[in-house]
Image (cartoon, rainbow, N blue to C red; front, side, top):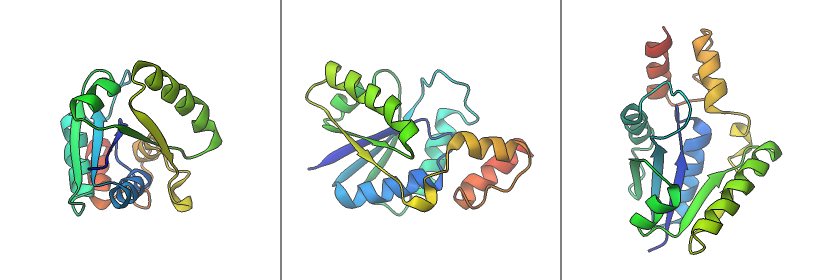
Length: 158
């Protein structure tokens, strides 16, 4: 079985994320959306809320599992017997950081490959950080996130 893990904070999951999940679901038999508990940053939604939102947004994908994890990603991937990590790249500015992560993961776990996938161009500019900032300031983020996420953001920020 071809399996991939797509890790991230997903705070919140955006249309760009869900585009990558759907595309990965066509390429792999099993997709694990791995929601990081240990983010090193303050999150708007706790891990359980992010898992619930992601499950709702991606409900139509039968080969998707949404799981929160703690610790090193490579250890998590190994525990699930998943040999591929997928990372999304929106712009060239993402590449340098993602390349560094891929190299570090390869050093720790040479048996796990990293795959980079770019979102559809209409989502390339969307980031969770920008979505949260717009929502926090009262802007409409409905074009950037699924309706359930839009509702959650409105409830959180008023």
